[in-house]
Image (cartoon, rainbow, N blue to C red; front, side, top):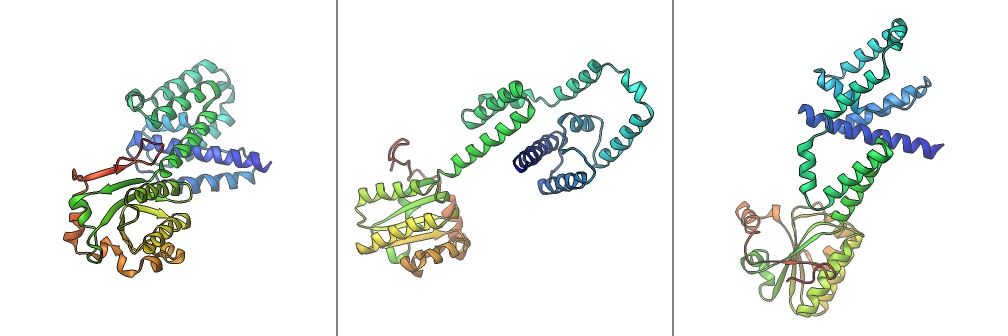
Length: 318
C-alpha cells in the first residue's frame, strides 16, 4: 500500500509541475514550484480525511481556464461551486449531453496545447532533448499520459546525471595560463581548468585527466588547477586532488588551486587538501582586484586554449 501511495503522490506531483510549467509558458506568468508542491500536498492531506480521491493538476482543465481568461486561483473555487450546483440541480440536463460533445471540447482544448513550432525545434536538435521527446510521445500515445509523464521524468533524470558526471576539463596555454600562475610557482607550471561538478560519479574523469597529464610531464613541474567554475566537490573529488598534491610534492613540485569563492573551503579542509597544498597555493578570484578578475574571465576564448577529452571519449587533445 505504501508503494502504491508513493507512486500516486510522485506521479501526481510531477504531472502538476509539468502542467504548471506549460501553463506558465502559455500565459507568460512566473510559477513558484515550491508553492505548487505545498498546495497540492495540503489539498491531498485534507482530502484524505473526507474520503477523497488523490488529486493533481489537469491539462485540459488548466488549458480551458487559460483560454477562458482565468488569471487567479479563484477560478478553482468558482468552478467547484458551479460544478456542485450543476450536480445537485441540473443532473437530468447534464445526463442528456452526448459524450461525444464533451470529448470534442476536450480535444479542442488539448489541441491548443500542442506547439508545432516547439516540436520542430526539438526534432531538429541533435542529442538528448530529441530522444526524450520521442520517448515521451511514444509512451503517451501507446500507454497514456501518466506513463508518458513518468518516462519523461526518468529520462530527464538520466540525462541530467549523465551531464553532471562529465565535468569539462581544459588545458590553458600562453597568456591564459600565465595569469593564473602564482608568483611562487613561476617556471614550469601547467594550468588545468575544471568546470562542473566533481563527485563520486564523475571523479574518474578528473583522475584520467591527471593521469594523462602526468604521463606527459612526468610530474616534473607545478600544476595549477583553475576551479572558478567548479560548482560542487565531494570527498571523492577532494581525495583525487589530495593524491595529486602528494605526488607532486614528492617530486619537489606543488599543486595550486584557484577557486571562485570560499564555498568549497569546508570540503578542502576536512579532506586535508588545504594542509597538503599550503595556504600560499590557495587563491580566490573574489580576493583579487577587480581588473585582474575581469582579465581572467575575458580571455577564455583565446586561441591559446586547448581542450581535453578523457581516454575512450575521443582521446587526449592537449
